[in-house]
Length: 207
Image 1 (tube, helix red, strand yellow):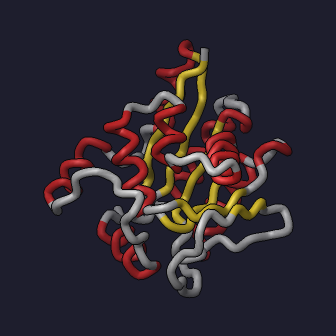
Image 2: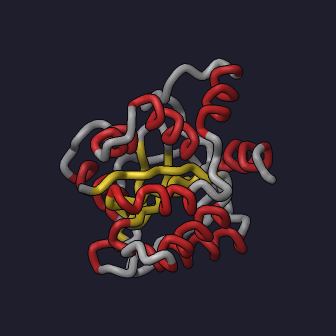
Image 3: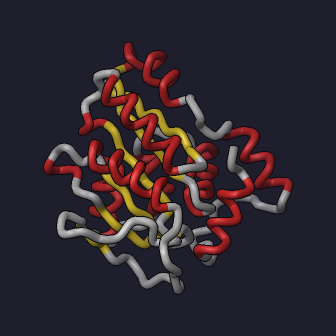
């Protein structure tokens, strides 16, 4: 039986480093997935990208953070090592533009194509993440974060969790911070963050 571990990262670089470490630790690329906010279009569609337009999103601006973008691009490349894990670009209601790779991105893509409601929140809860944690994970991606999800055997849980905890957002602290600002729960009908808002949010949490 596989257990899903999810962690949120404020920077592309932190997330990409963790993905590379997971691969080095022997976790098959097919069991790792990355979902990253792409409101600032840091990642552009390539010939290998599987573009799934869920709905049109607001205006975007030119990409910045090329170094970070290249770093996660490499991680997405590593995660997409299997043919089933092509890079997917999605527009998720309430979250906006995201880019992803791996099993979670494939699940999101199939949900979008099939017209299944729930988006990222539904995909996470279906994967076994608690509703409470999933709410904060999705809001974190909405605000510019990057989510890394891994499916691991129970016996490997402590070892893989320790790797994924490195540089990860402390979820309960982030939840309290959001609530202090008036946030209650993820709203799929909310307007996605603009590129400038995403940059501001990332700067707020920069190390």
